[in-house]
Length: 121
Image (cartoon, rainbow, N blue to C red; front, top):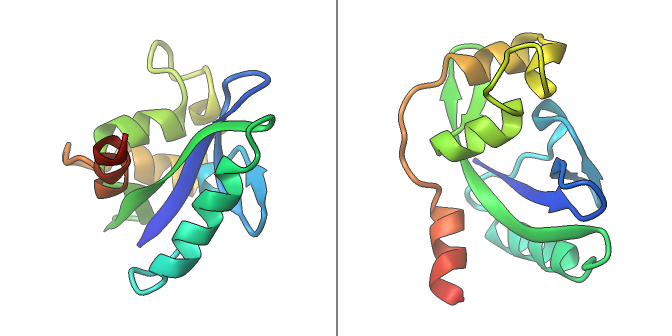
């Protein structure tokens, strides 16, 4: 399972791809099955063409956790939750099932989507 993420250019906010638009919440992100590689590449290419809207779109790997899905990469879980300095700041302040699943996810593996992006540069 994969999702696509980037940073919004105007304010640096972490955003996620959803059916042709960028949304702020990880729980609202469009999910792609592993057999949808062509759709993922198309969405990333569309994001890269929006250079005045977002910066550096790439796919992230997701894994099942208690209560839903979470990014495999620790870095991506932090990006989905918001700043780590205080639990009442950022996206984590909203709460809910998606946030709790992210908070309780374990592991620190790297996202293969990000590794592929780094290799291409």
